[in-house]
Length: 190
Length: 190
DNA sequence: TTCAAAAGAGATAGATCAGTCTATCTCTTC
DNA sequence: GAAGAGATAGACTGATCTATCTCTTTTGAA
Image 1 (cartoon, each protein chain N blue to C red):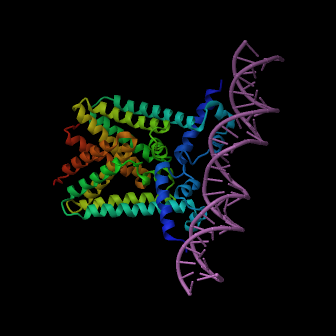
Image 2 (image 1 turned 90 degrees about the vertical axis):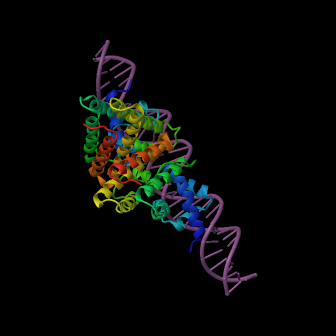
Image 3 (image 1 turned 120 degrees about the vertical axis):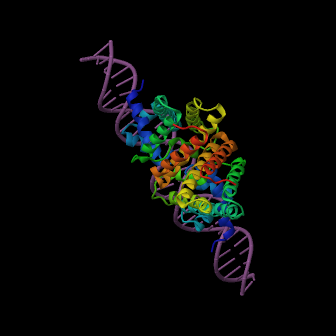
């Protein structure tokens, strides 16, 4: 049985490589070199590079969900919870090693809807949207909650892209203001 | 002097390849094969693959700007012009060979801000934002126009991503509704 | 201490990558 | 029809890609 610490170290290193360089642009050689691990250690843990990518995405999605769940479970009205999500994003895009959303990049690089990598990334986005819809459903009707959650997700995705495109945290601050305006227009106030 | 029709055919074929498969995933061999053109025809027209990518992006940006300028120059209030932009996007994402925004993909695959491909894609997004801000400046103060243009661009980018992620035209319809709500909140009505 | 499993190291396969080069072909223009 | 320019086909280079195989060394538990 392969050692789980080596496997995890590979996943972490691969994540850093993929988000920095992209999935296609980085090779196995670079990943095992940066992880300081033998080639066969990778291939004993993962059948292929694509399986490594899937594991990276799965772990990032799990981590992301946990952090967002924590924000959603905090007490307070929907508007405060959603504002906290935008604040969380603002801190994220400010980070030195911010390179955009790895799930959005996965959708870009694996555009085919039949590709498992594509599907995994799409699932993360849909889950994000569902989580925000659940928060909103406590205060507005289901169809309004779905609309707002979809719009808020678009603002976030667009802001992450523009943050990556050089606008930095200013993009997320703008997105938050727009989100709050949308919530206010639906009668959702603190 | 190389024949301009061959060069243009290469650019068109490369565009189709890049948007379908991605920049790194497609090789020179595939491009010249699909263009049914000799290898040296490509390298006599473009010093490198990256230069071909830049030419593709430049031509797409020019084409995009022309189409958007046409919408912006149509008579009518800002709200109508902006709604027309969302309508135009809705038609686009419905197209059979829609594969997301090639500029967003370029930013994803060439994440380094120093990379010319990255810079070219960012320039297109900034120009798009400036164009919408110009439309809005006829009806609201400059700082509000800039805020709205930025928010609208985020809605569009997010909607294009979600359309690519399986939501199709519904994403753009949602984005348009959100955009109209934002405009209404700023006092911009037809 | 022993021993089996795992990791390391590196050669290797076979494909593909971007890019160069040459020899041949085709078309236009004089 | 000759000359010249551009296109074509394809061999070729050297690097890189994913993945496999083998052999040696290390590790950890009985």
